Length: 137
Length: 112
Image (cartoon, rainbow over all chains, first blue to last red; front, top):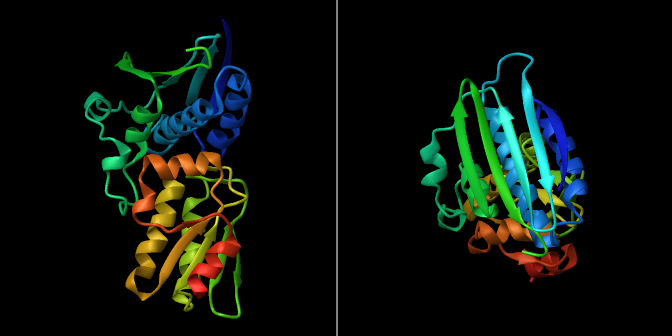
């Protein structure tokens, strides 16, 4: 097990910068297709917090990425507005969304691109954990 | 945010600046490309060959251009790299976009 922590400021520039570090860290565990799925899901999750999380001034996002031969877990924690859990549980397949819709795909992509998802919000902190199967899975 | 070139036949080729088309730059991309449409371009090739990653905001910006042109012309995409191709595939964008391997193929198709 190897893990790395990332602190992401609540800015879109910081999301793009963080994704480079995350993908470099897990590139030896995930197959290319899995790495793409992780990048899509995690970028959407971070963007969601930045754009809709309404974080307190000065607050940021803390992310821990754990990898082993079998899989990668990405743990994203933020102190912002919670996502209604039903948005994850009732998310549509991205393929079922009207292709002419210009927005509204983020949560669907997070769910569809990850192999497992857990979300909880308690004591003012939200925690989204995404799992991605590794090369050996 | 974009590089654009209008061919002698009036087809406009747009290349997003940088290797990511994400929430960070999607609005600027949309605004700059929309201005080209307002200025009269209605046959557009979006060349994504230098773009390594597109998120849902970038995708929304591309869809917005397609809708803005509407029936007055055509918007096609080309040069999809692996991650961009996967995003187009999972969102079924092939239902609304003609996709070409490169700008040359797209230009030939639009000029045909």
